[in-house]
Amino acid sequence: MTDELIAKYGDNVCTHTIEVKINTTYGKYPLPDDSILRDKKIVGVFTVANPSSNRKAPSSGNNIITDAALLNSYISLFDANKQMIADHPLYDLAISTGDRSHRKIAISQLTPDKSYILVADTTLISVNQSFLLHFIYLNC
Image (tube, rainbow, N blue to C red; front, side, top):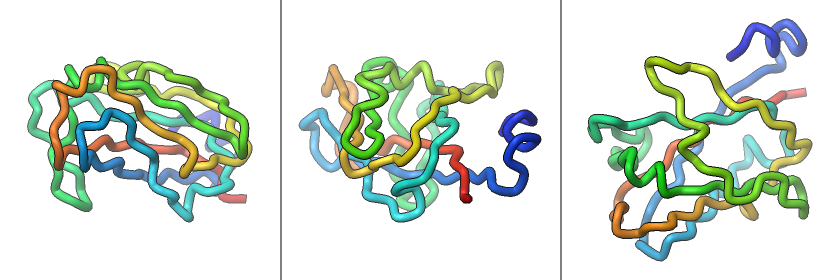
Protein backbone atom coordinates (compact mmCIF):
# COMPACT_ATOMS: atom_id res chain seq x y z
CA MET A 1 0.00 0.00 0.00
CA THR A 2 1.17 3.49 -0.60
CA ASP A 3 2.30 5.82 2.13
CA GLU A 4 -0.14 8.48 0.93
CA LEU A 5 -3.15 6.20 1.54
CA ILE A 6 -1.91 5.34 5.03
CA ALA A 7 -1.23 9.01 5.76
CA LYS A 8 -4.69 10.03 4.59
CA TYR A 9 -6.85 7.18 5.96
CA GLY A 10 -4.70 5.55 8.66
CA ASP A 11 -5.87 2.18 9.92
CA ASN A 12 -9.00 2.32 7.74
CA VAL A 13 -6.95 1.12 4.74
CA CYS A 14 -7.41 -2.61 4.13
CA THR A 15 -6.68 -5.11 1.39
CA HIS A 16 -8.71 -8.08 0.30
CA THR A 17 -8.03 -10.67 -2.36
CA ILE A 18 -10.69 -12.35 -4.43
CA GLU A 19 -10.23 -15.37 -6.62
CA VAL A 20 -12.14 -15.49 -9.88
CA LYS A 21 -12.21 -19.15 -10.85
CA ILE A 22 -12.36 -20.32 -14.44
CA ASN A 23 -14.95 -23.10 -14.48
CA THR A 24 -15.73 -22.96 -18.21
CA THR A 25 -13.99 -21.55 -21.25
CA TYR A 26 -16.97 -19.32 -22.02
CA GLY A 27 -14.82 -16.17 -21.69
CA LYS A 28 -16.79 -13.99 -19.25
CA TYR A 29 -16.22 -14.50 -15.54
CA PRO A 30 -18.19 -12.59 -12.89
CA LEU A 31 -16.45 -11.55 -9.73
CA PRO A 32 -17.78 -13.43 -6.71
CA ASP A 33 -20.29 -11.49 -4.61
CA ASP A 34 -17.80 -10.94 -1.82
CA SER A 35 -19.40 -9.63 1.37
CA ILE A 36 -16.18 -7.96 2.50
CA LEU A 37 -15.92 -5.82 -0.65
CA ARG A 38 -19.61 -5.30 -1.34
CA ASP A 39 -20.50 -1.61 -1.00
CA LYS A 40 -16.96 -0.67 0.08
CA LYS A 41 -15.08 2.36 -1.22
CA ILE A 42 -12.30 0.98 -3.41
CA VAL A 43 -9.17 3.12 -3.76
CA GLY A 44 -6.82 0.71 -5.54
CA VAL A 45 -6.61 -2.59 -7.35
CA PHE A 46 -3.87 -4.85 -8.66
CA THR A 47 -3.14 -8.36 -9.85
CA VAL A 48 0.12 -10.24 -10.23
CA ALA A 49 2.01 -11.24 -13.32
CA ASN A 50 2.89 -14.92 -13.71
CA PRO A 51 5.90 -14.99 -16.06
CA SER A 52 7.02 -18.49 -15.06
CA SER A 53 3.47 -19.94 -15.01
CA ASN A 54 4.17 -21.41 -11.58
CA ARG A 55 1.92 -19.43 -9.23
CA LYS A 56 -1.11 -20.91 -7.49
CA ALA A 57 -4.17 -19.37 -5.88
CA PRO A 58 -3.94 -19.66 -2.10
CA SER A 59 -7.48 -20.83 -1.35
CA SER A 60 -8.15 -23.27 -4.19
CA GLY A 61 -4.68 -24.30 -5.32
CA ASN A 62 -5.70 -23.49 -8.92
CA ASN A 63 -2.99 -22.31 -11.27
CA ILE A 64 -2.98 -18.55 -11.76
CA ILE A 65 -3.55 -17.59 -15.40
CA THR A 66 -0.46 -17.16 -17.55
CA ASP A 67 0.90 -13.81 -18.68
CA ALA A 68 -0.36 -14.55 -22.22
CA ALA A 69 -3.89 -14.96 -20.84
CA LEU A 70 -3.47 -11.86 -18.69
CA LEU A 71 -2.55 -9.86 -21.83
CA ASN A 72 -5.85 -10.94 -23.39
CA SER A 73 -8.08 -10.25 -20.37
CA TYR A 74 -10.12 -7.18 -19.49
CA ILE A 75 -11.91 -6.07 -16.35
CA SER A 76 -15.14 -4.14 -15.85
CA LEU A 77 -16.05 -2.79 -12.42
CA PHE A 78 -19.41 -1.43 -11.31
CA ASP A 79 -20.27 1.17 -8.69
CA ALA A 80 -23.87 0.30 -7.76
CA ASN A 81 -25.54 0.27 -11.20
CA LYS A 82 -22.95 2.44 -12.94
CA GLN A 83 -20.06 0.93 -14.88
CA MET A 84 -16.97 2.82 -13.71
CA ILE A 85 -14.29 0.78 -15.45
CA ALA A 86 -15.13 -0.77 -18.81
CA ASP A 87 -13.01 -3.47 -20.41
CA HIS A 88 -9.77 -2.17 -18.92
CA PRO A 89 -6.71 -4.29 -19.83
CA LEU A 90 -6.04 -6.55 -16.86
CA TYR A 91 -2.33 -6.62 -17.63
CA ASP A 92 -2.23 -2.88 -16.88
CA LEU A 93 -3.10 -3.77 -13.27
CA ALA A 94 -0.32 -6.36 -12.91
CA ILE A 95 2.52 -5.75 -10.48
CA SER A 96 5.87 -7.43 -10.92
CA THR A 97 9.21 -7.49 -9.19
CA GLY A 98 10.20 -4.44 -11.25
CA ASP A 99 6.99 -2.46 -10.69
CA ARG A 100 5.20 -2.84 -7.35
CA SER A 101 2.76 0.05 -7.83
CA HIS A 102 -0.99 -0.46 -7.90
CA ARG A 103 -3.62 1.40 -9.90
CA LYS A 104 -5.52 4.03 -7.99
CA ILE A 105 -9.26 4.01 -8.60
CA ALA A 106 -12.27 5.61 -6.96
CA ILE A 107 -15.34 3.43 -6.65
CA SER A 108 -17.72 4.50 -3.91
CA GLN A 109 -19.70 1.25 -3.62
CA LEU A 110 -18.22 -1.70 -5.44
CA THR A 111 -20.84 -4.09 -6.80
CA PRO A 112 -18.84 -7.32 -7.21
CA ASP A 113 -21.69 -9.42 -8.60
CA LYS A 114 -22.11 -7.02 -11.56
CA SER A 115 -18.37 -6.74 -12.20
CA TYR A 116 -16.55 -9.21 -14.44
CA ILE A 117 -13.43 -10.26 -16.32
CA LEU A 118 -13.62 -10.86 -20.06
CA VAL A 119 -11.07 -13.06 -21.83
CA ALA A 120 -10.71 -12.19 -25.53
CA ASP A 121 -8.80 -15.35 -26.52
CA THR A 122 -10.21 -18.33 -24.63
CA THR A 123 -7.61 -20.69 -26.13
CA LEU A 124 -5.18 -19.19 -23.60
CA ILE A 125 -7.13 -20.33 -20.52
CA SER A 126 -8.33 -23.63 -19.17
CA VAL A 127 -10.74 -24.88 -16.55
CA ASN A 128 -9.32 -24.90 -13.01
CA GLN A 129 -7.24 -21.78 -13.51
CA SER A 130 -7.93 -18.56 -11.61
CA PHE A 131 -7.49 -14.82 -11.65
CA LEU A 132 -6.42 -13.17 -8.40
CA LEU A 133 -7.49 -9.59 -7.82
CA HIS A 134 -6.27 -7.58 -4.85
CA PHE A 135 -8.45 -4.65 -3.81
CA ILE A 136 -7.41 -1.81 -1.53
CA TYR A 137 -10.49 -0.47 0.24
CA LEU A 138 -11.53 1.76 3.08
CA ASN A 139 -13.14 0.16 6.09
CA CYS A 140 -14.91 3.18 7.51
